Amino acid sequence: MEPLKFGIIGCSRIAKRSVIPAIIKSEFAELEIIGSRLTDKAKEFAKEFNCEKFGTYEDVISDDSVDAVYISTPIGTHAELSNKAAAAGKHVYVEKSSTYFLNYAKEMVETAKQNNVRLMEGFMFRFHPQHQKVKELINENKIGDIVTFNGRFGFPSFPEGDIRYSDLRGGGFLNDSGCYPICASRMILDEEPISVGCRLQYIQVNGITDSVDVKGTSFLIYENNKSASITFGNGNYYQAKYEVWGTNGIISADRAYSVPSDFTTKISLQYNTANNWESRRNDTFEIKPKDHFLEILDTFCMEITKTKNAPYNFEDELLKQAKVMQAHRRSSDTGKQVFLSEL
Image (cartoon, rainbow, N blue to C red):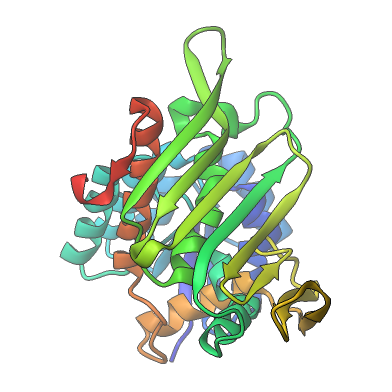
């Protein structure tokens, strides 16, 4: 199969550091054109990656040679740009979080379906092999029945003026970091939560015209008395981990969400050989380095070209994640537990 030709919409840090290099490395993708809100920025990016074509977002969308677009603009612009690209017959790989509202996510999926193109949200961490190791240990009954998932993702504050502090453009740290352990809980437990209780902490920015969530905690109830606790935000000591606590042990992933391509991850298993403290044992499993940006990109391309089936349906997964995110916002706004069946 010929590689899919990609147009880049948005000259972001993640595009520069991770996604464009993955496109260049992939045997299933090819960099065709780079677009930015400002043509000079697109020209600068294009020069860095030896890409001959550059222009505006509209130039990328209207380019007949482009098969797929990668969108990494502010979250508040994702829905409009995704719909425009899909209407132009382009497959869409959109950065997480896909959008700010569940209704927008539904529109994005519907537009993609109407135009016979695919739409995927960019949770690259799902494609790192360490999570398959976690699920393998769970399936082998190494920790017994799952009781709870505990996920944390936080980091030091970003510079003043960072796009994450602009709620008007879809900023906030529920969208930026909370989405990762929320998604991970759904992936590891392999089901959707029944309800969500969430509290977000807001700060005022730009005087009194804008407020944005910077930290949050949530508690998700799953079937059969399982639960997940999530903590996230900026202005914290860096953590990107989760634990799965079972009746007979605990599995821990210490670098779960953002993993450099040359980084060896470790999965820890703690368990008992008898019912006492002295019988506790610890096993550690090293997972070889893997570029999860390349893995998600290749999966996207192979699904589109029917080279290899993806492990899940892109559009269904995007909608399920958007629904749980919406439940978090509504719970925080109302101060009440929100049932997913209400949305």
